[in-house]
Length: 224
Image 1 (cartoon, rainbow, N blue to C red):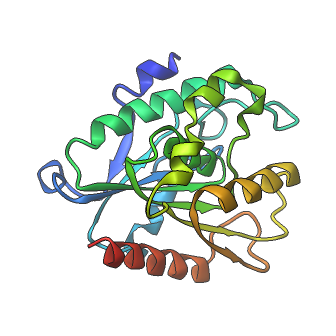
Image 2: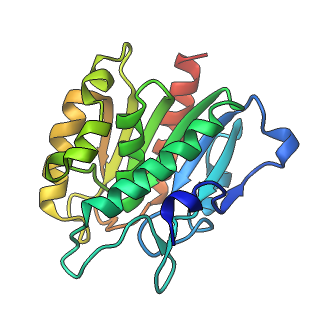
């Protein structure tokens, strides 16, 4: 599949009907490896109800579910595959910005790598960012990706982009070098709210879900 072509009309699950969406705040959900657009929609009843929620299916089918870009057996990636995914999703989000009042991103696991990449490509487009049990992409292995990331502009935002990052310190899935890179990146580029949960694993727990709702309500009140 041509990933760029997929994002011209991706599969998206919405919380509102077409006619109810224009002018609302959009909350975009980006699922993890092997899931689909219905996976994170289970969070919708627990999130602030003023949002239009859009859960996007990743472009590449695997067994089971879908992925944003391929992973090999060592969890390594091909930069060209990552580049196709982030530029494709960026183009779709740019089109959405025309009809919504604001856009907030929520990404779980690999979806967090997509969400953090979006704010690095268009720092002024987004109202807030939620990253769950995931990581940010280190662009040093790909000059093409590095050119797309405007980290300097993101760090210079005033006020800085609000970001919630939740994870289990003992997450068994996300590799430590990815966590270490992400720690360094968030400290320099966003207004970070970080919470570590015990015994959660690679998942989303009820306590974290409550904290996400509080964070989103705080951001909405602060920017009203």
